[in-house]
Length: 305
Image 1: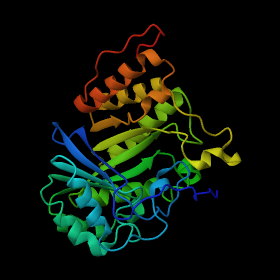
Image 2: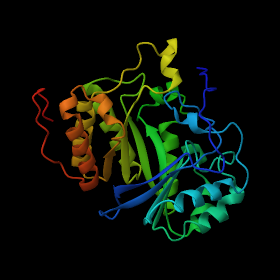
Image 3: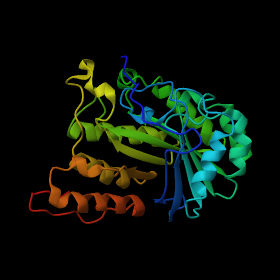
């Protein structure tokens, strides 16, 4: 499927397009601040049809030295935090996104952090990961988009990978002391809907943990990508319900196999009731932090999950 990607936002190659401090439950079971930076760089070459992160990317490789400047710009404006995420709308170890010539300068800026988290595609998890691990000299974690434990759907999503690719990448990282977190989509295009979508998401979480992943982040699929307006997707996608997101959160945490987070950014959009949307989102946020099931929100709309 060819998707029009010309409608990009204006971005500055010497500035991250977003940065903030967020609280997260760490691998050690405590809640600490994370400096989260969304770096500006060249668009991801894989072009998954559900992704809209390309909107904040460049068409060309950013100049050598630009990424270290972006990190400096953000860290000078953020309060201190023990952990950092360098997300870049694609793959950290894509040579056309993050110039390898900058690895040393980037690593020098990260040595005081306890954990450094980057995102990457399974097919780009190779010796470059280990080279950066050695340069940064702290706990490295790679976030990988699994999306779903279904090879047929992965192919239709244009992920450019198989479940074997994901398993190989996860084991390569964990065997070399690099932690892995996985992104899982709730109700992706071409997949199950309703209760079956919950089951599929939970199967994907189990698959990820089976490969050595220590953290799963569940993302409700949002209709934000241009591909969803294409005739080819007509009838193959609908957003998940908030109840489905709650079900996955509860069952995922109850597995006790690793941290399970659900993405609560703009999550109110999935809730049909304005009265209970805020409290239900806050409940999920607290469960992300505590990894414990809290009391359900009871509303006059009849919702109690």
